[in-house]
Length: 326
Ligand code: NDP
Ligand code: GDP
Image (tube, rainbow, N blue to C red; front, side):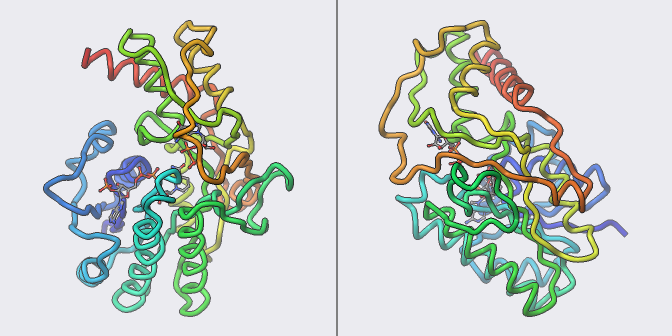
């Protein structure tokens, strides 16, 4: 019998990479999407997996749709990747962010408890829950949380609800606390993809500048394709737990700009980057830096793609994509 996995947020960055990974493992993949007539298939097509996924109609903000899906399909594993995932938008859309990222998780967990309690559950938690790391050093699973955006707060609720269903009902509920992970199909609003797309446009003569906010922030950036493997590994353990996934190396946005521009032969990137205060946040999170010892030791997982390789992969993919459309 094929194992059945339900992925919420299937058409997002991680949903696409996880689908590819699980399909290669022989899983039947059910993908939850909000409007089956209007799914943006770009990411799934990029990885060539669209045709192999069975789509089911549901919305994280609509409890009834989630209850129906869980009752009908009783999947072996649920990967909850759906979210309003952009920190920058979460101040203006705090209520929506909370409804989808917090209450949606409560609905999903309750549906699993009521209709399919043996289902294993993965929650896409985030390093944003920690807040800044520049004073405390590397963050671990034991670092106290100090969320600094409505997004991070919404994810903290979901993190604890996932732990609470584990403790209250003995359900298999795992949290992956993921540091930023990127790829050629990262959303265009995120700084890495905004830069790789912008650099490709400048290189091809399609744009003259990139407008950015704070260039001094640091992030621990890994490759999404590496991280989805560990999501699966978390659900194959004997006991559910919380795990950090990170590279253990942190870089600034300036570092990202350096590598990206240099890769296309431009050494004076300052000429092309304009600082625009509209991209500053009400509260900035200056540095994230994660210690991944537990994932290494228990899951046997390691982040493989390094920083420079990741930046170049993203720039190359955008150059190729834009060259085709030129
Ligand atoms: P994306 O933004 O690429 O994908 C999120 C997906 O969620 C989209 O497919 C979106 O669908 C879907 N979605 C949004 N709202 C709803 C809703 N109400 N009902 C159903 N689906 C909905 O995110 P990533 O793939 O980058 O991230 C995956 C998860 O991991 C997210 O939960 C994110 O917060 C978390 N995370 C990501 C990190 C990263 O660096 N990428 C780091 C740590 C955590 P639609 O196309 O319809 O909008
Ligand atoms: P986040 O870590 O989930 O918020 O990922 P982002 O890629 O959105 O942002 C990473 C960092 O880049 C944050 O510190 C932002 O303030 C900073 N940043 C600077 N300029 C920009 C910009 O133009 N867009 C975005 N998204 N972030 C920017």
